[in-house]
Length: 370
Image (tube, rainbow, N blue to C red):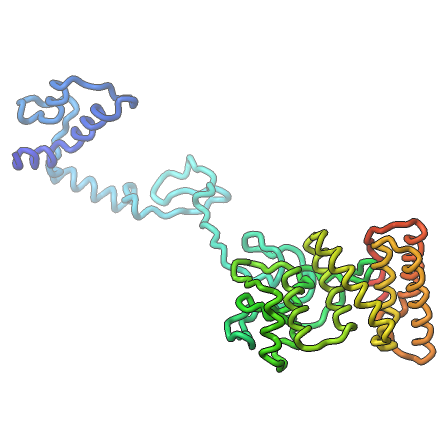
C-alpha cells in the first residue's frame, strides 16, 4: 500500500486535487462524481486506464532543456520570485513581462503606516497626530510617599504658572484641562489630603489621625477621586493643623468651583453656604489683608446673589468698592483691581434683574492683560 501511494503522489498528484474538489467542494464548478469515476481518476495506473488529461511528468528531453536555457538567457522566461517592479509614469509593471498592459498601482503595493506612540502633553490624540494646542498649564504626574501612612500617592504637579483664559462671575478661573480638585493631593489609603505647599509640612500625628476619622473612607476603589471627597478630606486635615476662618473661606470657595466643574448640584449648594459663613466670619474679624479685601468681598456678594439674598449682596458690593478705593489711596496692589469696578457694575445689573445664574465676565480681558 505504501508503494502504491508513493506512486500516486509522485505521478498523479494533480488528480488527487481533482478528486478532493469533486468530493468536498460540491458548490464549485466541479460536479460530484460517482465512486467508480473517483477510483478511475485517483488510481489510473492500477486500473490500466490512462486519463485523457494525464500528462507524463518525466524529465525534459535534451532538446527541451536547451530551449529553456536559451529562453532564460534572453530573459523571456524569469522565475516568479525574481520579478522586479519598474515604475512607468503612474503605472507599475514587472520586469521580464510585457509592458503593453500595465495596471495602476493599488493600495496593496503601498507600505503600511506604522503609528508610533506620541506624547501630546495634555492635548487630544488622533492616531499619530496631536489635535489643537495645549489648553491650560502643563503638568506632570508623580508618585510620592504619603507622610502619614507611608504608601504611594500619585499626584499632578504644575510645571509653571498659567494665566487663566476667563473668569466666572465669582472669579473662578478657567485653567483648561487642569481642574481645581487637582490642587488637592490626597492619599487613597488613609485619606490624608492637603495642598502641594502643605503636603510634607510637619504636624501632630495623633491629632491628624483623630481628625481623619471624620472622613471614614478610603479611596482605593476610585479610579479618579471625586472633588467633594478630596475637599472634605482636606477640610479634616486642615482642622487638625488649626487653620483660621480666612483659610477655610478660600478652601470652601475652591471646593464649590470644583463641584461646578463636575456638575454636582448638591455639593455646589453645601460648599457655597460653607464658603459664605466662613467669609462672613473672616470679614467681621478682619482676617483678610487690605490687598485681598476687595476680591473676597466681591466673591461674597456674588455667592449671596446666587443664593437670592439681593440686599446683602448689594451691601457687600459696596464694601468691595470702598476697599478698592482705600487700597488705591495707600497704593496697595490688588489682584485684578483694574477690572473690579466694571465687574461690580455687571453684578449690580444682574442683582437688579434678580438673576441667580453664574455667567462669564468680560471675554476681552485676556487681550487687555496682554
